[in-house]
Image 1 (cartoon, rainbow, N blue to C red):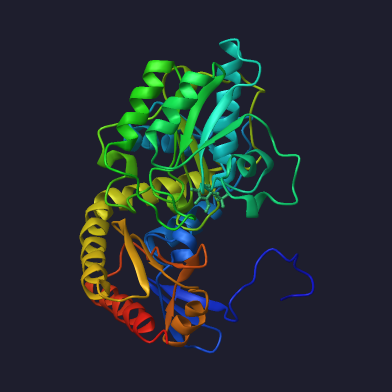
Image 2 (cartoon, protein in one colour):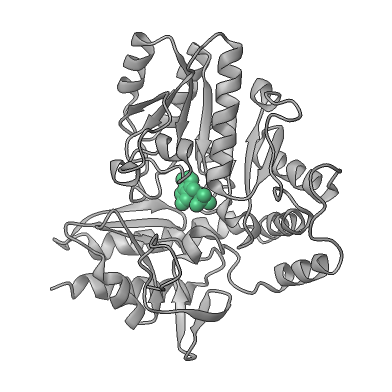
Length: 389
Ligand SMILES: Cc1ncc(COP(=O)(O)O)c(C=O)c1O
């Protein structure tokens, strides 16, 4: 731990000096295969030449002008986001948690418009939506919330994947304005809901006049084999939050909406000094173009599908493995015991991976990994689990 950094992380004892594609090199020149992409951020891999070029070029032109003037690159980004989400309008911010804050403010203001004093938001147990006060309050983790009370009010919890619980809330309460849900829960350990769940949530929202908000901050941007994970079902939200991979490492988030939710704000009600600046917006436009041109959704579907199949086959009889879950290149392997020490063990074998919820090995490799790199990740993870004793 560094004496001058606040005690918020417990980092592994390694620092990377450079990267290229899915490879990282530490300060001593040792090479590692990246199977976590800085938590789902560097989906195009490290030092992507086109991304590097666009950042360098924009840095020589204009980094920042502020939102008091038009920003054409931000307008282009909003148009591209509308295209890939099927929604209408975007607010561009700097992180996932800010995108969530925007979605929650949209819910409050549209809810007040319907006469609700405290517009309620149904959120899921074990969800993760961020660390600012409202996002933290929406998050379904007592561990993350403990010590930070009083939390923001208005959140009603239901078990993830349980439609009856939501129907029960609908019968009991008149103050609900929205459902906020991750189409695949990330921090919770890559939990995939039952087929049809999102479609049924859409029906409930239509029936009761609630907004349906999908948090696709981790699951979005081609990671699961579609632009957004909810697109595996024929369903469209009213509001969607996206971030992480959007600028392949520059800080960015976006809240995208349609219908009344897209028209919720008027000037002065929401904003951000840095949000959507020319540098980040132009970079995000390039990232979206590369994702489309190189069909990274298709690639994630194929590579991730093969990895999942291999894990399922090879770990089926392993008593230390409770479940292999995921979609595309969003993969979780839940063990029956603590898996935290595998992070260092994997590093010793040249693979950087993550463990969430203590027992779930989480893999979010760059979407550009080739078959050989995918195979290497599978081999290392497989051998680590085999050798647990
Ligand atoms: C589903 C989800 N929502 C929100 C967030 C918060 O995003 P950020 O860390 O960019 O603020 C995360 C981050 O991991 C996430 O996975």
